Amino acid sequence: MRVLLVEDEPRLLRTLEKAFREQGYAVDTAAEGEEGWFKAENYDYDAVVLDVMLPGLDGWEILRRLRKVKQTPVLMLTARDTPPDRVRGLDGGADDYLIKPFDLSELFARVRAIVRRHAGQSASVIDLGDVSIDTRIKVVTLAGKVSNLTAREYSILEYLALHRGRLVSRTEIHEHLFDENDDSLSNLIDVHIFSIRKKLRSDLISTRRGHGYLIES
Image 1: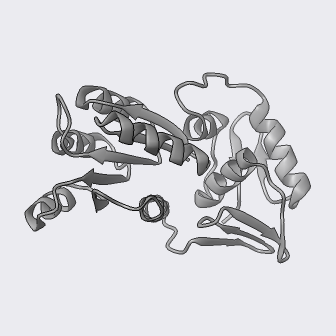
Image 2: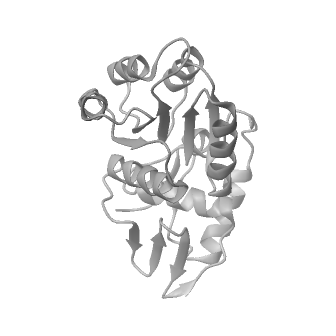
Image 3: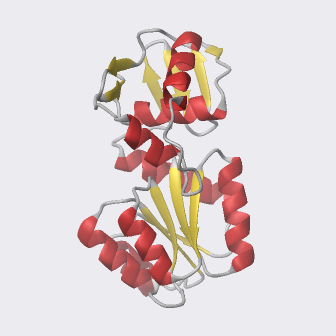
């Protein structure tokens, strides 16, 4: 999954970026409002973690503009904890609202939840017959036995599973699993798909040559 972190406090931004990467996310960052809006508008993210008080455009304005063009899940991250502020964020189109200071485990849980809801998946466990994906602890099992997928293989499988029943192009996979510092659209995705099939089931992921990949619903 690819997330955008928009936060003007340098130390917190570095901490969040490191923590999200350790959780297996592809991460883009922005330290002020105009940059955050540019990236949110021009790139496809699975979630945006958006501070309210920013130099330039504030978080409210970014959210207002974003909701005119996209339905990307947004979690507002702010020290403003009054009920009117929370109501303003939620009524303005935010999917969730977290008050600073916060626990990282809660932030991750909330981001996972808004990503799942956006994909129409309510539970943290995705069942694909004898294959089960626990998105909370990022573990895949086959017939009850844990599979040794790499972090990248897990990310690809999770993305396809969250969008099962829909054909997903190689370009879309690349855009959602690689961040702005990785511009290589190579055959690595095909290699990872081959490895996932080998470790799980050969028929788990279907290929539509020239179009992309599909996990049947």
